[in-house]
Image 1 (cartoon, rainbow, N blue to C red):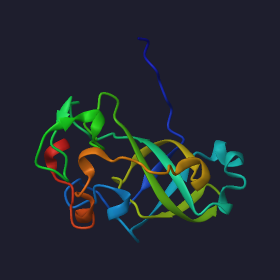
Image 2: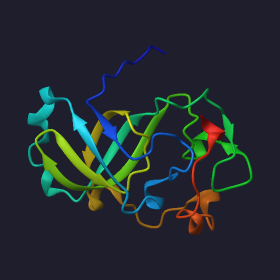
Image 3: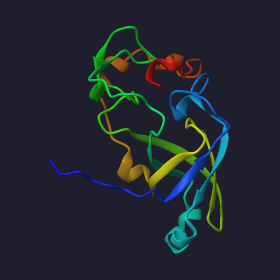
Image 4: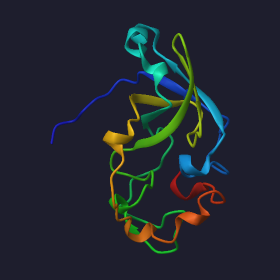
Amino acid sequence: METITHRPIGVIRTPFLELEGMPVQAAGARGIAGWIDIDPALEEGLADLGGFSHVILLYHLHRVGAPKLTVTPFLDTVAHGVFATRSPARPNPIGLSTVRLTRVAGTRLDIEDVDILDGTPLLDLKPYVPALDDRADPRIGWYEGKLARIDEVRADRRFA
């Protein structure tokens, strides 16, 4: 397959300078504030974004270690295929988070519910639209019964 190259559209700023202690999912980061500095050349693309309560962020996991095909995720003690997890140790280190958008001011986006390392390159963002993004009757595989701990689980060096 051919190589694909992306250029960041901005940088995500958060209180998390290191992986240790960081929430492992946005659902476990309620109320944690951060912001995004968007490339000023792209400011026109932010028109009308302020009307949305949430945005989906796609970003480059710039500090993750080597990819692994099986991982033991933070919410389990059993190894799973990486594609059946939200682990950052992926063949293509792309992260995904849905965060609350609290303000758009020029090329700065203020956000909450942040589970991302400071300085993370942002590849793209999209508005969250429940009618397009939510699905009825989802199956959640091995996550069943594990999500009650999401508020207490924090990252460690496992995937650094």
